[in-house]
Every structure is written in structure tokens, then in C-alpha cells.
Image 1 (cartoon, rainbow, N blue to C red):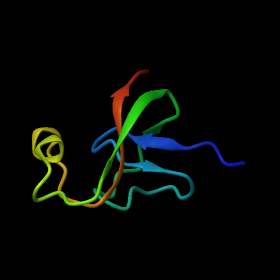
Image 2: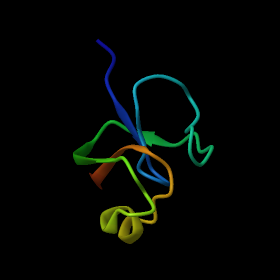
Image 3: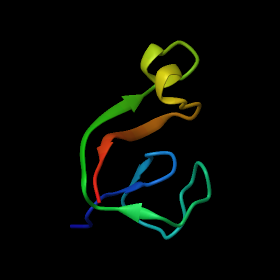
Image 4: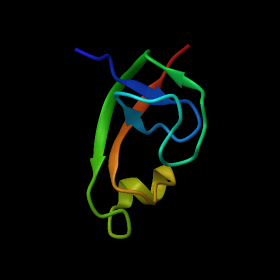
Length: 64
């Protein structure tokens, strides 16, 4: 099983790859807690507060 990692720049959670699909960053962490799944970023208050404009799974808290 692949360990999920979160982008340090936009918090997008991914399983594979070396580049974030949302922001293009190559900086990730495996130390994150909680997540939110954004289905409709335009109508989601959470997505707006987090600055998310793309559908997907995002980490709520990053560490290290």
C-alpha cells in the first residue's frame, strides 16, 4: 500500500507522483492530519476559506 502525502504548498493529498497535480510543487510531507474532500469548490465555504479551487482531497493540518 502506498503512503499518501500532502503538498506543502496547496495541501492536495496524493498517493503517487513527484509533482502536485494542482500547483506543480514538488515539496510534500507524509506528516499530516485530517482531510476534507472538496466536491464543488465554487459552492464550498471550506474550499473558499482554504483557497481551494480544484476538486479533490486536501489535508487540514501539516506538520514538519
